[in-house]
Picture 1 (cartoon, rainbow over the protein chains, first blue to last red):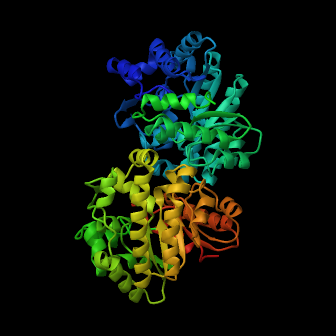
Picture 2: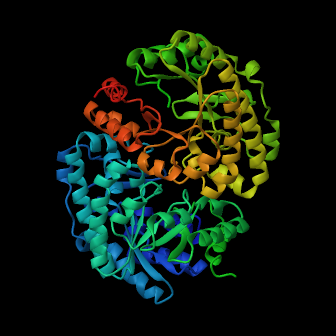
Picture 3: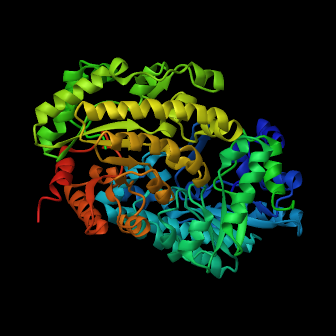
Length: 316
Length: 316
């Protein structure tokens, strides 16, 4: 999950002078921001600072980031729109993220594992079609159900772009790749099987061939666990709406689990945080588990609550 | 699920002259609007026209309905705010809904079963605390995790109000009650167990004692199925993010299922609708199943798609 962000005073200080997209595209600043939570809290994994929409921009769809979230001025609604998108070379079109990874890897030394990430193909398709975030994904689903071939054409281009970017991140020093197919959980299981699984599988296979473990996150994953397994990840990243013990029971022993404390618990008290983190560790059981939140850190999170979360697995 | 709404020209014609809250509070108009989809499409269940926030207003928290959704001017944030809320007598404070049920029951004769509804206690609490809808329920969860006693006090008052209103609806002619605890699916399983189940159970028990079957809907229910069963409903209403076959496997034979076609399928073509409705019927299997959407009808739904959905179980 994204670690750096507005809940950190050192991040807010940086952002007072640098806008979000410039920060993503300036390697030394992106690496510095990625390390901020490690320096302050001491996590054992460091997530590079970037945005899942960076490759979308590289494909030829400009993105702006305002207070209301990302906005795309030319939404994709037709096959002709899909055909105008290119499959970019990651080294030529997104060198800043690769450079940021190299810098962060050097700065970290062995203090923490460096985690690269990409958005999932369906999730990026939803931003391209909606022109930004959405509550209902109505435009995306209308295209998917009425023109499935156009949707597949878009997803194929996205998967190729994302897979190449993931492999380039590994080459630049990422020691794991997380695939955020955040909004694919909004699909019906049938649509998920057809429009999410094969494209996730392509990205995951490419990152694994590049030599690192791959974590798959889908928000609202409880009804998609078996389908997520079919995409072949090493780790399932689980949102907070389902019990880790119930997930383990469903998916068996062949995968690690990541998660799954509700980020809103960190808005309460350090005691509530410690108690929820321990409950997650107990629920996860004896097999592979990466303690994490079930989604990103909320901007209003008090620092002492973030610290309590990082400390929970260390204290007796 | 709500059947009447902006996708119907006869509903839009009515709303051109009457605002939403006036419509809810004018029995003959509310009954007329409730019957509009039955007259046009011929469903075998008729959902009364009202809003889940009607009892909140009766408790002393005024609600306004604008284009951006419901808005409460005085959000509940402290125990003192909770203590100011009253537990209203449904017959005195919400007679219009009860009168609308009586009128609708007479007008329907035996054409369709009349379904009353209430919001679930957690869902109404979230509107009271947030002052409207929310993406994250941050204020609600902050209160829940930092002041659980205040949250319980609020939920107890809401459950008492809602249970009384549900029983009064049965007395006025409702032949089933649906409990929409829509946003309780956003809770972690632990928080759901403590803050949703006991209050749902109170409402469901009261409606069952009044003599009708009770349907429980939770949006994003896939991780909460066993907990939903513990609240004692006769029917689980399932959103579209999980397979009915997987739900049946988890919950066993002792409950009927309702759902679960993605409302966005109805934005596509009648053929897509027929195919999704049939897939839901097959997935539901041989035990009790009420074919329905997984959430409310979208305003942009074409009439021919709504008709295709209602016709799907009738055609061979």
